[in-house]
Length: 445
Image (cartoon, rainbow, N blue to C red):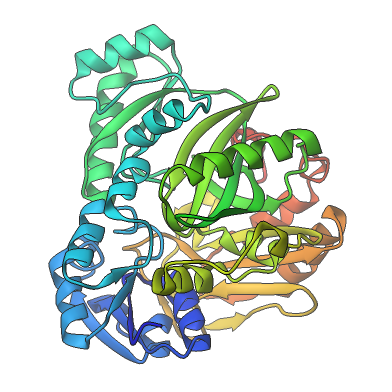
């Protein structure tokens, strides 16, 4: 097992990784920016090192500073979490060349599947249906116009190295294309240090379904699918498993094909394969070569600690798990709690949390990095914690979430807790009659 792990991230995912390391008796090193010096992940880690200023490019995206921190601390492994450098194959390459273990797939596999353009090409070669769009990076406006005209508007411009809705722009007509292309490239460079973007056909009313996998290159297993269709501007707000719209035959076909594809990739660690589900058909969307925000949904339903498995696979080079070890139980739903004001068009709500009471109870979990007195800064993603509840069925999971949301007290900033209460009571959510664009069409405020 590793002697010391450096956590190259912040916030709730850094806390989540540190907790897994503590249970494995592995010392941890937290990196942080100047404004994060008093944050929860810094408090929980065995050591902490400031790697730069509040700007992500100077700290959490600063490879030189992070590698210096690893060298000074003597860390022999780095866990990248999600976002920031987690899907940057150059970072993985540098870590590996420095004789430090990158907890995730190889740089080669990350380049192939972490890059959304390469992933589409690979998935197509392996026989999965893919969404119509560009074959590679868009280099000019003329090229973008030609591709968009061929597949027909509306289209999506997406960051090749990205995720989470960053660097993504919807274009309804050609007149919007130039401005959208410029903005997408700027966002991609800002958030992922790579301005490459590509174009895809936009689906009007699809569901978003994804499959969680674990692999040690030789053995690949799945932890079921998640339905992540409650979204706002491509940012997921609620995730659940199993998907309430899939018939068992369709579900099994999806899971089998996903495992078959990943088995051919020489993949190591945790990953998620995402699909668009529209009118009874699946289309490969992308593969996230990292842990995802919504991983607790699969952990709870499958009874497996995914972060621990990431670390074990990276350390031993193999997993002891077989598909038969995964025993799915009940229905699990997660609500993302963001520091935003939904009544003001989701305006960010930074500030100091002066009252913080988190729910607890039977089959209830809160993953976060918040505490009374902590500062929520405006410099990073607005996610502050996640509430995850399990029920014997979907109805009970919804009821438990409603109870927990009513218990949740956060004062000093505005959050999406009230919005989640409204969503969970909405007849369309209860009947699962929604798609990825549903939230944008409803009036909750």
